Length: 272
Image 1 (cartoon, rainbow, N blue to C red):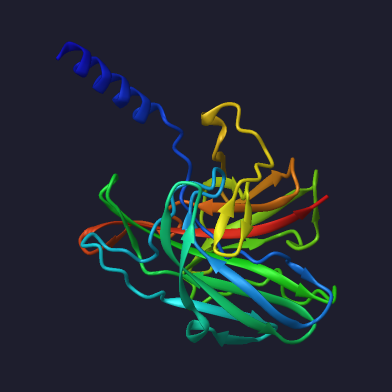
Image 2 (image 1 turned 120 degrees about the vertical axis):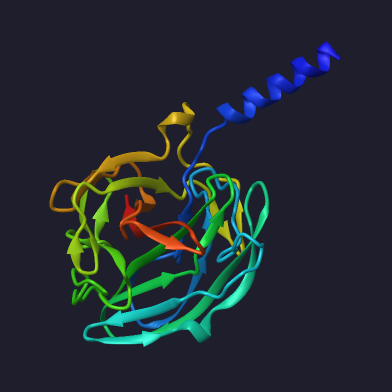
């Protein structure tokens, strides 16, 4: 009996000391700078990208029911498109489990900047007895012609990170800058988590291919704060896809009678 209690205690210590990587909603596509128009594939997965770990079912409530996404759209110059009908449910496999996610095939038309954004239904996080809703976006450029990358999506996206640096033309060692907004207004002193897609994505799965070894679990996610004007900066040490998540950017919100953290997320691709 004593040996069992000791073993249970050791297991509990291990669980409590295990690395707590951040939840991140992805809007992944292989390339953010395209030479010409055409079809591109998006993977929309709610996961822990740094360690390619636990993947959550998008839009799952506290009863285990999955709700459809709220928004999936594209802003090109002054026009917006609704791509909700293009979403197809998939099962995405991480290195530790499988989760319900989405993918979409979108035909990108026109030279310039295409801002893609996605807003899932709130996800119930049982460990914290709260809901999480991450409004995510990325900018895809066609033919190197800059147009509207610095413009916000605005309504109907409630929170977002607006880039202050051209996000598809970022090199390793460069500094990225952005501003966290809610309803079009800066969010002062926003708390931001920074993550990295540290493994390869092939089909509907993460595959082992660690790019950056994590020598200390507390090193990730990286944490930074915006200033009083909602602005932040980050210098990239490695090429690849980097995500910024402004926690609770939507303010004090409730969903189904519980706390709702409405987060603003942007993904930026860094090149060598």
